[in-house]
Amino acid sequence: MNKVILTIICVIVVIGAIFTAIEITKLNDNKIEENVVEKVSDSEILDECTDEYEILEKNDMLQANSEEEKISPNCSFTVRKYYEGCGHTTSEYLELPEDLVNDTKEDIQEKYKDYKIDKFASNEIILLKQNKGECGEHYIVKDRDGQVVVYNIQEDGTEKEYEVTDITTEYLTDTDKVNMKNGIRVNGKQSLNQLIEDFE
Image (cartoon, rainbow, N blue to C red; front, top):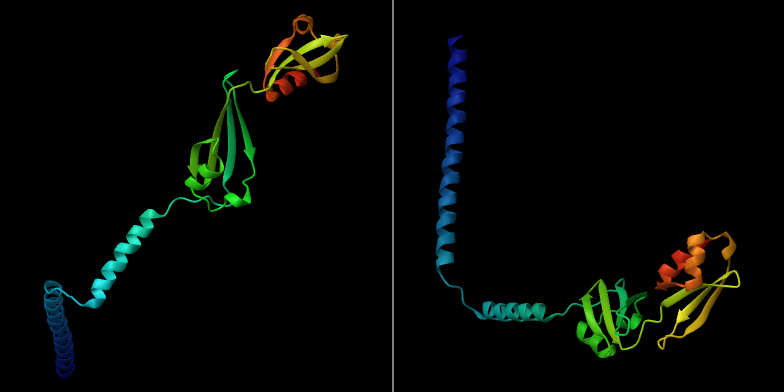
């Protein structure tokens, strides 16, 4: 039994010695690597390759900084028009013309000289144009012989027939009938359509 215990102790001592030797070797290797790294980092490396790399790196930085934002194919394109005569602004959402894809802000300004670029991003363009007249979306709704009729108010103040609806005034409320005799003024097609829907 003593021989078995003695053998186990010997095996443990040998294994411990092996692990200790491995750890000491690792420590020495790390110290050697640190010394090499310190010596290499302390010395300046100069040759033609590093000079060329530095020049290329500077050129890449200049090129990356000079690249301008360009229009993507799925960019939204909005044209707004401001009318000085009435103070209204209309917005028209258009499909992006194919010839504008990959254009820069300067390219857009060149193509749309009469417009101001209100917003420019790769995914959204908003152009603004100022007009001296009125927007042409001023309407007056009146009763004509028991029928609801829409007139467009012209810039000179005259009324031009725009639409004769199928709506009769006999089913409207008394308040609506009185308002229709004088005419109900509406600005914009959306407001006009809402008013007509209310009468139906």
